[in-house]
Amino acid sequence: MLLGSEQYIADLATNLGMSDSSLTALVLIILLWSITWKGISLWKSAQRKEHWWFVALLLINTVGILEILYIYMFSKDKNIPTSASS
Image (cartoon, rainbow, N blue to C red; front, side, top):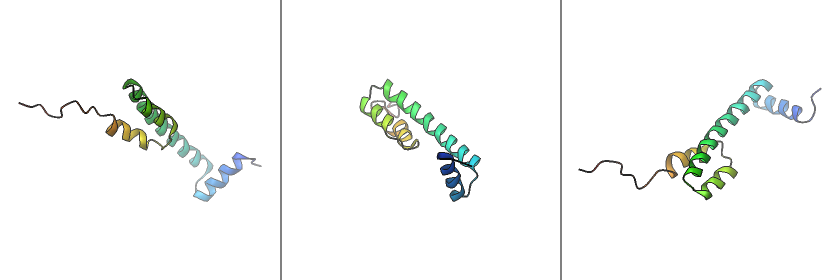
């Protein structure tokens, strides 16, 4: 007999049409995805001394979406020219 959270996981997996092991694997994949992007974005914001971004990235969990946006959009150097002028 399953108790507590094990029963909840079993019920959730059944409602999603998945097995318990498939749900566990999906959660682990999402967790690894999120931790990877969060680590990269926190490292980048710390090196750039962007304290508010660091706190926001640390506290807000968006499964990697905010972290990816920060890395590829908000942390770009605006002083670096995109093309060499002749």
